Image (tube, rainbow, N blue to C red; front, top):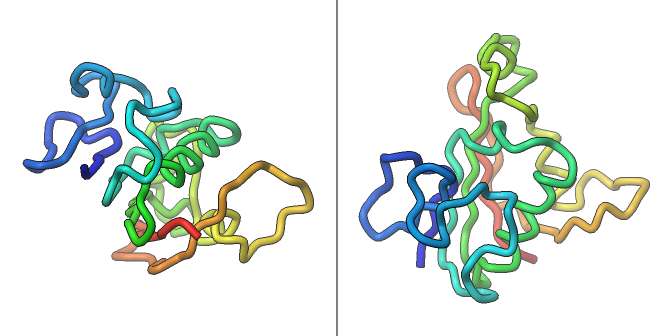
Length: 145
């Protein structure tokens, strides 16, 4: 199984769409509404293209990252694309539906590079790729540790 988070109405063939409007059956839900209707380590790949900034920071964001960690098989890849809030452009801030903001350093809380002085319950990821593309997009790819 391959999982698209918030794919809207444009989801490639062979991908399951976890989306509150365009998902089907049990997949018609917000990403932070966990647990997702799939077993542990049952998903081979997950993508979230310009949706994570629509998920509130804090507990909802942690729920999505931890749930993705639970369902993704070992060696599977979670790919996230978000606007870079530190890029110097207005894109991340102008959209009134953006409720969380991301920069490259945001991902280091999930891979353990950035030591938090509290236990947030984050399941750690291994970062496979992390870069800024163009003038505003961050691409991160990770796999469960």
